[in-house]
Length: 371
Image (cartoon, rainbow, N blue to C red):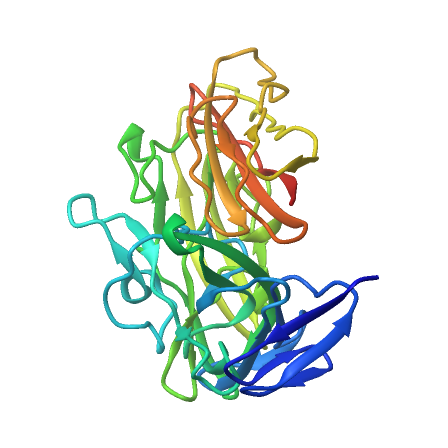
């Protein structure tokens, strides 16, 4: 292999090689791509504390800064590559109303604020002490986005991400549903608090919150936080994976959640149109591998409704740095595969709804992008 000569103006750590100002480093082989070195994938961390974070720049020259973002595992990624960033870093909380910048007109989240922004002047370079949100719990995604200077051509970005588990240091004191009690679903066709008209087959989530001994409330809706669900009558409310609930019949029942030995029960009354309706089935298509810069078309055309009704589509992105998707409410949305320094996986979620309001269980598809 050819020998390369690199001269650095600061200390850097490239795997096992260290170099300082004015020192020329000789090495053979190919440098690694940009990646998160610490914390390692699968690590268990403690909420509210800081964890040392470190990256390797790999073969990327002109690294300007690295921004770090926390997301619950299934939260849709909201970070726009190269987007302008305003406001203070959100170092204390991951909850939607505190953690994400919102559109001034619609109020919808548009850009996640970084938990840490680091440059070469930090120790280690482009790393440092990364605060873990105080109300984080369960599986979390740590996304690192690096800005690379291209001189007059502007900037490009690369990313890496790891999945970790975050646990609070304090004990759970109590658990409860954050909703009206008793919960009434249907209410003769009125729109519910979840933004839809309740009907047979409708899938929904309920906010479950735990109060911990450190005085912090943490969201416990996801099973990754340790929460399990049970229904008093599976012919009225059916329990689905990932903390999802589905209306399957009319009547009175109860829902019980359990976490860390604590329980809460919610009485539920369902009064919806009793016309039989089988929920649709989402199919997000086959996984594929593409080259950076190519146009990628996702396909939900294999999704179906048992009664043959028309479907409404809702696509979202749940892994990888944010890509600009077109036609997210159509069967075949598209995006341009971004620049990557090595293979990176982008994951997309599809949910379909029939015209009577019944939802599908989410379907997922992975798109691997190569340099």
